[in-house]
Length: 172
Image 1 (cartoon, rainbow, N blue to C red):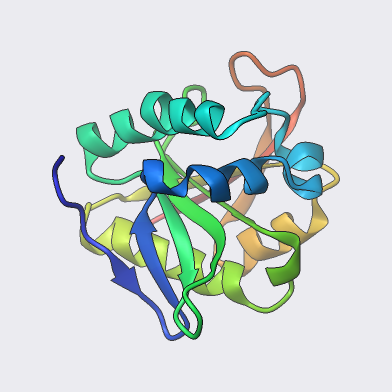
Image 2 (tube, rainbow, N blue to C red):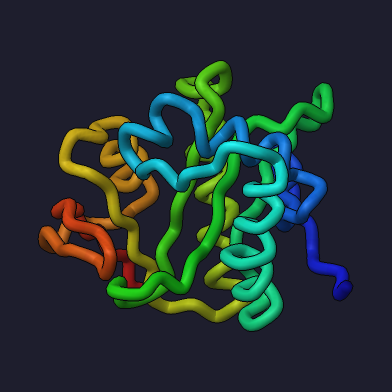
């Protein structure tokens, strides 16, 4: 398997998500806010998580060189969340997304990791248009997206999802 770059911030290591993250990903994708704001991915076992990584994360990483990063706290090596850049159907530009386990919310890790991911996108992958989508009731996500410099454009629907989503954009 090809080796992909790891990145660091003051408090975090951002490492491309691999099958070794299956147990962590199972917990993250079944956390209350993920289920409420992002949706149920029907992930019940570590094997389900491995298949999710193989089928949804790894192909984009291999094709584009970027995808989902697992966020690892430097101080203790704990996996705390994910942040990444996604070539998402129905969204113009590259979508930035983020999620943290409940114990690590509200501590600035979301902004720290998402800022780094935007920097990586611009400087390493020459991305000139970023998008972010969120549900209307996910106010914390909206605040973070706006703090990152993205601006609300309109409501959209993406393929295979009936919910109206708020679309934010940042053009570099």
